[in-house]
Length: 369
Image 1 (cartoon, helix red, strand yellow):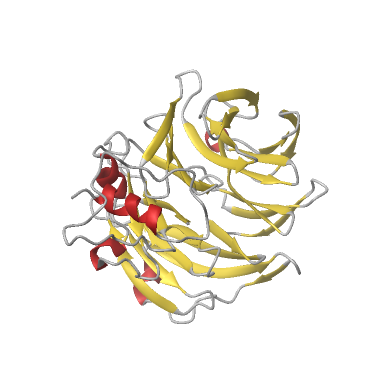
Image 2: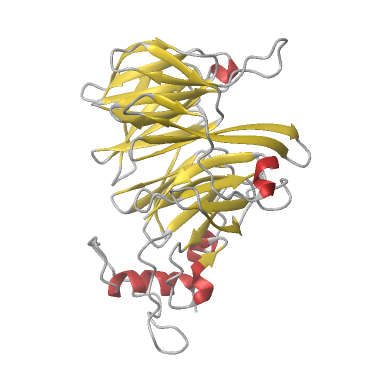
């Protein structure tokens, strides 16, 4: 019995808050071995695991936060893409987003963008050319997917057809992209030498301007009608240039706030981590956690954790994701490159809930449906 049948048939039978245009799957038996349907959990998380470069071992793990799968074994599936599609996901899982109850995934090493349905079944894919360069990150707006490309461009893609409609040139090696008030903001890393964020007008799909920021900008998010940025600096010079957490104000000016390596936002609070790797063989590290109020523009250096497991303080982390419905905070660690990383889940008030294996190598991002 295919897992694809179990999950997809459940979508057709379970009353959810969203409506799907089609739920036919004539090629698969819609019943499990006991003759009863399997209910798909109403709240679902998909964990993108990057894998090792050129190893073709990226994957997507499926996780039910409420543990409400009818079959308890389906509360966590380590590689849902493989089980649903009978093939490997690809090389280097770079980014994953949800848009209109679809899942979009970028495989940077494979140079593809995939669209999956809410059960993890591939519906369409777009292959990028060598001229495009590696795809990196994406943003969705008004049924368009905007993808940053290492050629120094952003591609506008129709979310339904996955056809490229247009390009706009930004800076070198663009990384994350975010939308705010009809504009796209793009972090131009310059492979460690960039110092700008490009601003694109969505209506005309042309570049408006560039904003000077800290060295090596990479991460962006939108909160309370403003844009926030983490630049990675550089570690291989003397002296090294540290990471920087900055605010891009609505007037285009930039404010330095703190030093941070990862962030995520919920209800106008940005949850931050500053993680320093002390041993690249074991991925040991030192971590601190703090927060920033985007309404008052106040930094709170006190940890937002209440009962953090001791090992999380000394294990280098890869990122933070937050369930936008519950506010639960998910912090994920490297693993070793041979062993899988771990996910630590906390309530929004910082209370520890659980720790679990992420299901793959180098967890990259978690999205929730």
